[in-house]
Length: 284
Image (cartoon, rainbow, N blue to C red; front, side, top):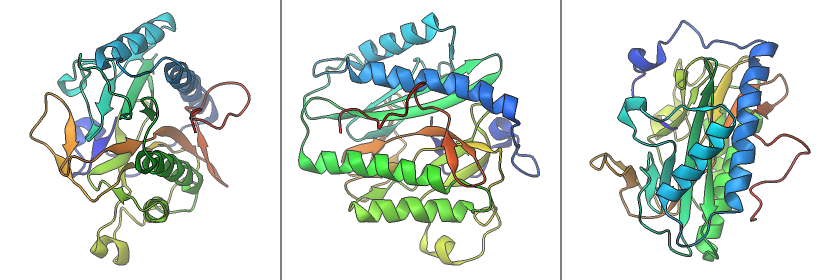
């Protein structure tokens, strides 16, 4: 689930003096959760089709988690009513599953958080509903490339600013725009932990000193990499809390999210499927 760009809320994030680092055993526990999310999205990609509803997607996810003794971390979080976020079209984040059939040519983002024994993992995929236009394919591929580039940059010694710049370069390469309010966050013992990591930097932020942006990643940090991209520049409309947060220009969005552990040479995804490495999503 996305953390909107805002001052850190101590009630939710309890920010310490510095981000917490996880040891090897703790990272393994998060990876065990995360692999279930990777295989969940692979399974969902084989089922999702035109005419399927958000409620049907939510029911599939709920049953999948139940069979694996995983607790849906999003249900009840800030009053969220469902197992997962289902955000079609221009609903960028926090979409509440509905009974409206998904039309062919649409994009829909499914965001799932899980908990077991006090540990959390979080991931999201954007799915194509049947054949899609070239523009939407470009958006999908750009969002996927931006996420993977961000994962690689999440290594010890790099700054939060460098991650944002890298993601922004990928967005520019695909002719896409980042939604500024959408950020990543620490994760582990809580769904949202310190710090909040922005991807879109304003002109002033990009060129001036900023204590948080210039902070360096440390090996063992666990965080989400989850930029949200759009075909046009748009911001979030916050006046529709019952359905999710929609983009101001009513233009489609796409997002891929991984839970990531910071390594010494690169970031490592903890929400990829178990087994041989796969180049997912499978519909590219």
